[in-house]
Amino acid sequence: QVQLVESGGGLVQPGGSLRLSCAASGNFFSINVMGWYRQAPGKQRELVATITSGNSTRYGDSVAGRFTISRDNAKVTVHLQMNSVKPEDTAIYYCNAAGIYYTGSPTSYSPTNYWGQGTPVTVSS
Image (cartoon, rainbow, N blue to C red):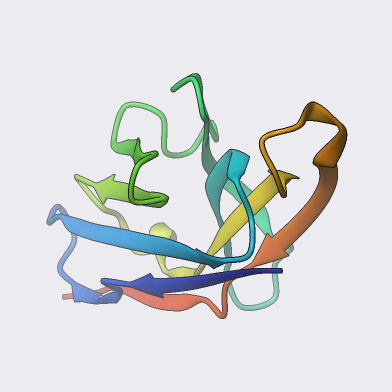
């Protein structure tokens, strides 16, 4: 099992910055991909950004160039630096962990996804 706890959400003015963090804990060896997704009212959940254990990143089109994802493998945490935020960035942001190694053996790999409870981000003046 993997538990994900997000922090850092809140109210921010348009053009401002916010930093989200997510800490993973539980009975596992490593996590292949960690990332952030968001869901605005009345919309489907969408990709914000993901990062692999090798630090390869992928961004959603609407945030590329404004948001930066980073990861600390030793602490099993992932961060999302949000700059130049816009009202359309308002959403619940969810941390995701995908591809779990439960031991140091490759045979322990499972493609299971885990989700955090979500942290709200509101961009408004």
